[in-house]
Length: 304
Image 1: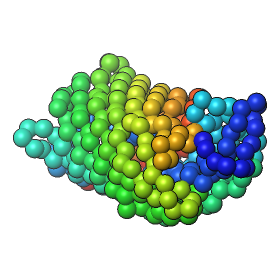
Image 2: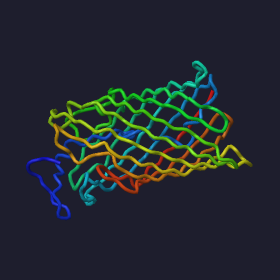
Image 3: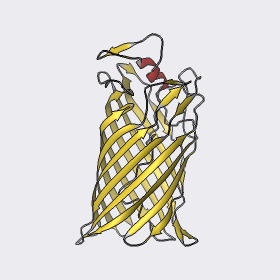
């Protein structure tokens, strides 16, 4: 982190908080890689359409710069995000393909870093285009290749410390699948890598080029659907991210995408075509960003 003046000493280390505050921009959906729910890699039959709505609230009360000490006093950030998602499942050359679009809208509020207040922000996030292709799709095993493209069309103002858009292109490539284990148990494993374009308007004074190293993620889920009532599914998961170090004009700014996270999910089909799902997440380790103490998501899905 580099800045002249406004230098704060925390636990014997020098944390130049003002530059972090000036260059801190957070996407309202995960900025690091693509999070999956526990059964996302099980496709619906070709010809099915799905509409999904996500409502997410997250709270954070500490920030750890890369390789530095945790900044907790006078630090926090809350967010509320809604996402509309449309998916169409189709058959292409014998493979199930699901082109889709995700449209996020979010609000960031109650932001502070080491006692320095951060601007609130709200508006449209960057739209996401995706088209998973299932290379293997049978009742016991699935395996999919999933590309995601983030389009820099969200709300962004270089003069603000927080933004819901990122002012840059991103591309994520994900591989993963589901294996049925018997007696209602299943596991879903996935790995992905995200590439980032540059943000040429990255700091509060409207100058500076932000570059970011690739982010890598592993996600694992174990799910159980009771054979006596297959409308319910309970799942536990873990995710690990690494990489994603950021630089402003070649100088590291203390932010990256390094974290470990645990998850718990419960879902139910309340009708044959409507599912309601609840998700709890918590970061257990972060290096290079805010730590999520609580992350809750309500998802409603309609198939037709």
